[in-house]
Image (cartoon, helix red, strand yellow):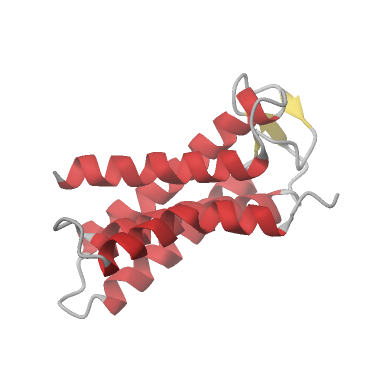
Length: 157
């Protein structure tokens, strides 16, 4: 329905871009590649869930599990949740392959789970705030990604 705009891409990428800038500026000794991966695992999970999940007709609102229309903010389905997990897993797998040190199954699982959690936060924020006009789609994307990264950082510390 024309809901995707260039601003959505910017909002979705802003956390990852911020992480890359911090890395380039040598700010702190953070696990930049790990948190960068979590940010894009969250974005990828949300994209997979949104774009593929709309094909499932059995959609429920994440806040009360009442049936709703496919494509509505906060709507979740079995297909959407499965593809969200797949989207997050793809980024986690990319991380462990590109890390070169070793194939770390724990980090693969961590990135996958945190990306999936970010997607769930996106659905919650969409249902509670975006549907009520309190946040834009881009703001929901950025905040859910930031929260997934913050959780990754908290686990790392």
